[in-house]
Length: 347
Image 1 (cartoon, one colour):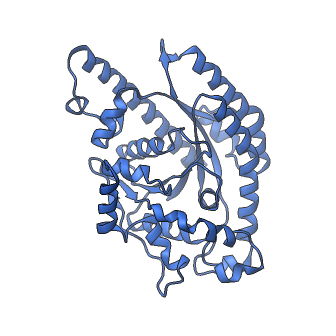
Image 2 (spheres, rainbow, N blue to C red; image 1 turned 90 degrees about the vertical axis):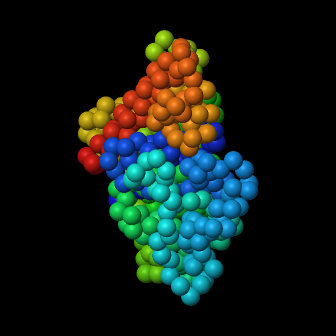
Image 3 (tube, rainbow, N blue to C red; image 1 turned 45 degrees about the horizontal axis):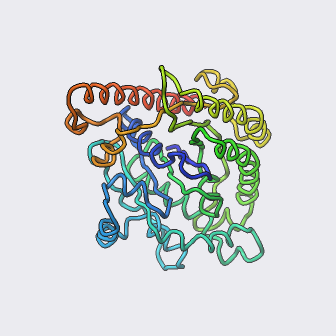
């Protein structure tokens, strides 16, 4: 079982969409997949379950409130006299082998306490079970369903929960969008990720955390690469204005992110990247904007590439164009899933 964090502290780069589409495609290719919604906004949970408003979310918590990421770690954070156990994930409708560990708005309440525990100060003894609790919960839940892959959807931001989830993951995928802010985020990640790796190494070497009821694991994080999404296509590729920003992102990744990750030991063996056709820009895929297909996807809680002709709800030339786009997205995500799987199997 391999954990892949899908993270970028910049918002609006399709992290949730990436987790849903990639998870679905990996399951379509025969993998057993657990998606984890760690974002207190619960967008992945809403996407999977087809929530249309606050009432839907409230009803879910009334019936399934004991099976969320927050309820799963409550024994550690509330010092309850019971152990963390696997929670029952949601089986995703329409895709065998795909499961969801549901999100919870109240997870944000634990951010400050986890941050204090992760300062690794003299007061850690009282909070020693917290840094390893999310890892323990996710592992137990994934093992209970025999998961091959865990995809962790994360909020934008640099808080303690995100730091923890990146640190406990085996691999990291970085969604981006073609704009100046993603270039700035790449530069920022070149500084942040090595610091988080150094923190994880220090935490894992502390006897008090290694011997906790929920031990903090040895860090094993490796960065798979970036995915650039949400560009307007033209003549078989990104439109010129978008291509310029894609080039900027690739350049920042090659000249600044790659060296920083290499220095921190956060890259795979160079031969693994070469075997999968990945250059030092670490660009794994370019995926165009879904445009009008996104509304059908949201309506049916189904990735754009898996929409049936009935779900596309169109006729004539419009239907033909939808089918062409759907098939192109299927090829894009199929190639991305196969590339990621190969890189992980080769590493």
